[in-house]
Every structure is written in structure tokens, then in C-alpha cells.
Length: 228
Image (cartoon, rainbow, N blue to C red):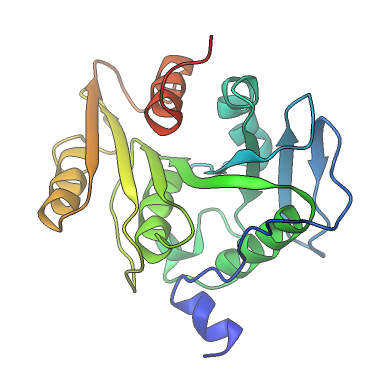
């Protein structure tokens, strides 16, 4: 299958290298070189080069990589987690806009750069709103790469293929007026459970938001016991 065909199926080819040979990026935020019109930021915690967990975070519709890092970068890097934050090519992610393609290919290229220079112990996909839907869908399609998915206020899950068996953590506000909990968070979590996936579903009193407390709860679920 060609790379373009695999991208259309939502498949990611890049895999962590047990002995990366590239120059490890220093602490802080760096912009990956992905070519004209493609953007991804990498947040690196202070300290040694790893191995470390990698969290890939997808913004909501109309968002940016900078907004992703503002939402999760602080709590994640405080837990010694690398954060990869791509920006969608369009106003939202390709799967939401009609089918996987360019955003999958850009993400695969970004992951290849990270894996070539950073020692990665585990990978999780995450996102908010449309980005949460994207994380769920890509997680089902790439459970052989990302063993965990953290979805904040997602709208739906739609994957052209199923590989591996990721586990899922989903949060949704009971007062969400953008993506109502009844037809979004509750429905999606029930569908994944019915399909035999390991799902942790949490509701909170609030609207269409991702808060530091929710990010901490998701990281605690993924990484185990809280830091400290």
C-alpha cells in the first residue's frame, strides 16, 4: 500500500527508534521543519534526553498548535512528557472535514522527526473538541502505535480501519452546548465499550472546555500515580 493510500486510511507508519541517532532538541518549545504550509510544535521538558512518554495533542476547530501547548504543555512537561502539537492544514482536521489525508501525512512526518531524535517510552493521542474526535478516530486506526487516547469533549469517532487495542479516557461537560453530552461523550464512550475497548468515561459539571484539572486527571489516568 502506498504512503498516500495509508494516509487515506488514517494509518501512521512512523515508530519510535530504540536508539535515535538525531540531535536531541533542548528543553523548551521548538518548531519542526515540515515544509511550506505545515506546522507542528514540540515541547520538551527540562532534564536529560529520556526516554520519555510522548503526548500528541490535536486542537479544536479553528485552533492552533500554540493553543494546544497553552492547554496541556505545562501540566504534561511537568510530568516529564514530551508534547507534539500539530496545526491542521484547514480550519479543522482532515477526517472531520471529509476524510483523512494531508493531516495524517503531516503528522506522520512530524512523528518521524521526533522519533529520530528523541527516545520515546510510550505514545498517547489526545485532543479537544474536533481534536478529541480526531484523537479517538486516529487511536482506533493506530492502536499499534498509541496505546492510550485522551479525548476532551469529543463529538464523534469514525475510523476507516482498526489496528491494535488502545485504551481510552474520555471527559465531557454535562452543560456542553457545542457538543451536547448525550449525543457525543456518552454515545461515543458507549460505542467503544460495546466494541470491547477499555474505556474510562468521566463527566464534569461545566461546558465545552478543557481545564488544567481535566488535563491532570487525564495524565494521571495515562501515566499512573500523580507526580510527587
